[in-house]
Length: 282
Image 1 (spheres, one colour):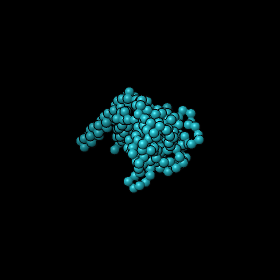
Image 2 (cartoon, rainbow, N blue to C red):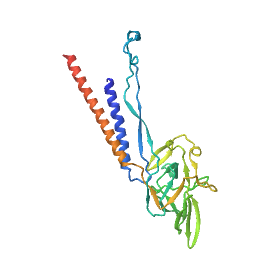
Image 3 (spheres, rainbow, N blue to C red):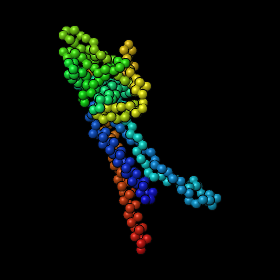
Image 4 (cartoon, helix red, strand yellow):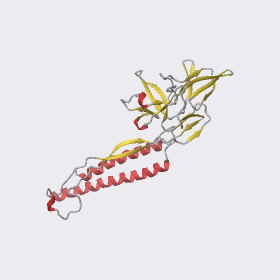
């Protein structure tokens, strides 16, 4: 296979991956807490080809000696945009959103094998669900939201509690009868470099394998400390997706045109090879 076919096929594969990423963004434009993604590309292997071995034989040459043809491009990385999304007021007491682009709720999931998996999310569409005689704060998937203790535990309040409230620092309060009670404090974690997070499905993120949790996910609201500036937990509203549909539509048109261009180049190259073979065979 010659260079032009390799370039065209590699370009088609890269552009198809970009189209898939854009389509995923558009499909999640109404998903609570979803963060848009973008693709970055890198060049494939570049090979140096010399026209002839003696530079002295080209005294009037202006361009560099030899050529360096590439072999197309590939998708190098999918980057997540963690900019704050728009805020939608719901007035639901269990709907929360985080102010601060590097802040996350901590969630714990128990796998089928019994393993405890630490997950992070920006989706604050929580609910109170009866668990072991108490009301546990859980995600849409039923995974418990964790508190801010040194050994995090699921957030829960007594079964008969009412008037569930969350302060800006994540402190939970509720009423038992006519008495206001103080509950646990929702853990808010800061991840200075969110790009180390991997998508774990269902709008969850997980630290890359091998990265120590206590070094890369810092608790922002430990007991006895104030929240960092610009970080807060807000009640009665949700952070929506940060997908910009206008930008995604423009990117989709661009990617589709590039895909068509590479497909056409591949088709033309195939036709030229067919003509060459017929001429060679006489």
